[in-house]
Amino acid sequence: MPASKSPPVIGLTLDAEKPGGYSKFPWYAVRENYCAAVARAGGLPILLPHEPARAGDYLERLDGLIVTGGAFDVDPAIFGAKTRHKSVTTKDRRTEFELAAARGALKRDLPVLGICGGQQLLHVVLGGKLIQHIPEEVKDALEHEQKNPRDQAGHEVRIVRGTLLHKVVGADRLMVNSAHHQAAADEPAGVVVNARAADGVIEGMEAPRYRFCLGVQWHPEFAITRGDERIFAAFVAACR
Image 1 (spheres, rainbow, N blue to C red):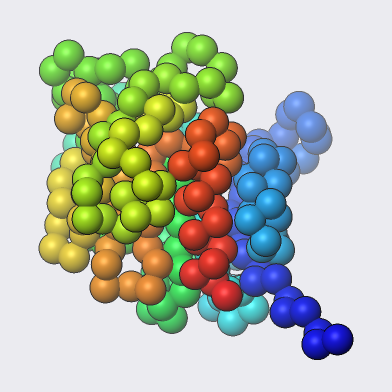
Image 2 (image 1 turned 180 degrees about the vertical axis):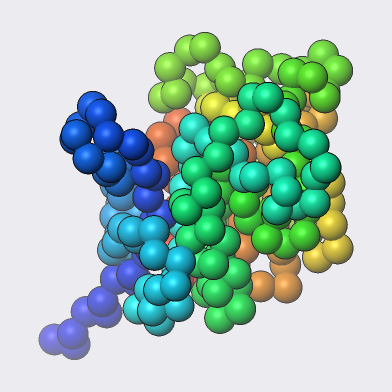
């Protein structure tokens, strides 16, 4: 029998926490369902410690990159903002590493998937800017930091026909979970907005000039819908 092909190796960025809780020393973290979603789609998940100078070494061993979410923000100075909203919280070393990893992956044309805060970082890498605090910048905004559990839907998104995302999920609308107070603010050259909420907030973006470059503002690793599972399946397929 012919040997089976090895699963594509997918790097996932980690969150970082200060001492307390799990350990009395600084520690890394990632939710189990990120890794489970990759494995379920046929990929081999590998976790990436924050070593910005070694980003290229990681990428040489990867077939694809997922930039995960987290309860923090990209420093507004990185996308040229002159002010910083009081709600902004940064994790500078994590962001430094994720910027290096995302830029390096795109330069190599490795498939990249950005999730929630990872989508925002990917948007900035591609030349975009961010809304720093949705409740103060979007009139009649939805509850984008949903109060119900993250494994339930918080609101609907409308998906733009003709986009990669629409092709992947096979639907015009999708119910999603929502856990963010920031969002992409624009549609820079080379970036296509592929999903919006009813209040106009950008919920997804992609860059067609790359093999696979997709960002979604929600958390498809919870697999609330079949569309969420299809996102991971399409990403892993692109990494083969």
